[in-house]
Image (cartoon, rainbow, N blue to C red; front, side, top):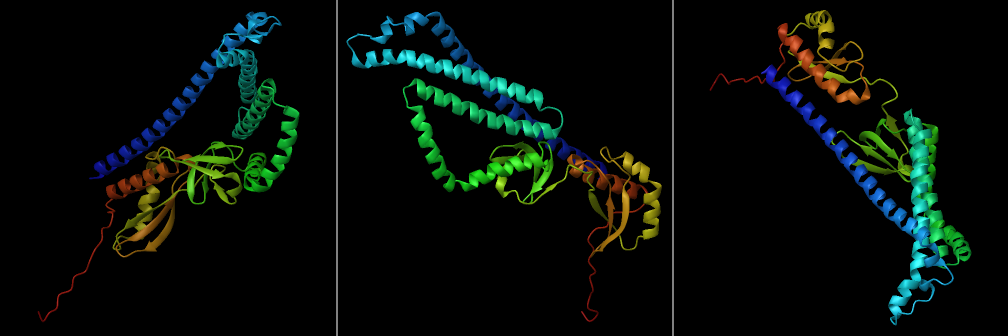
Length: 336
């Protein structure tokens, strides 16, 4: 019976590990797919840029045919006239993508090492991407003949109007900056926000992503993170409750536990300290519930609880201390 339960616990641990591995594989595949797509576009833009530079005079020269095509088809002529503009736009997009890859590489190179640096790096990378894309889009619009100066002036007024209606977005951005700068929350920390426990996967400009042990992802707006519990900064102290029968002598239970404390810890793979016997937790209906606890890393919290229960039960049974079961007293009427 005991071996079967231990086997079931080990199977559950393996299932959890498999789920975590599956989540990691999905994240890696998604990242690889994005990288491949980016490289494909980069190669296309690079090819167009090289061809444009090689045939620069034929495309952009004063006597270039594309300046005044005359095919007899109005739509086709318009498309051909737009080719130089399209190629110049590709130049800008190619430079934009190179700037994105370069900024990402530099940010990763500078902000590496501690979780705090990685968190700040991701925030800086997000801001750099927004700035680079904004500059690239403005440059493309200028090539297409748009009055960029008027657009920027109008955008300033529009931004003011939109900003008044997007105060929550601004609050999210400001809150995200303070979260990173204060160092109270970092990528890799295990935290509980609004009763939801998970590992911080990303602190973005607008929101923070958490992922739990089963692979579920929760996205929380930065401005809504008012109170949270960061469980990664100090060692955790998981506790377990183990019941013994009422007829069992508690002094003997304590003596058995103290004599086998080292053995119990040896049966647990992730504890950072010996298990403490903290006394009686509750006088329950069918058992006296005893309170035990030990230190471990936060990532091993639930594993430590499972291992402690199994180890304590095993040692108790080896010494004749049985786990109680629900009992009911039945009384018969003598007259019946």
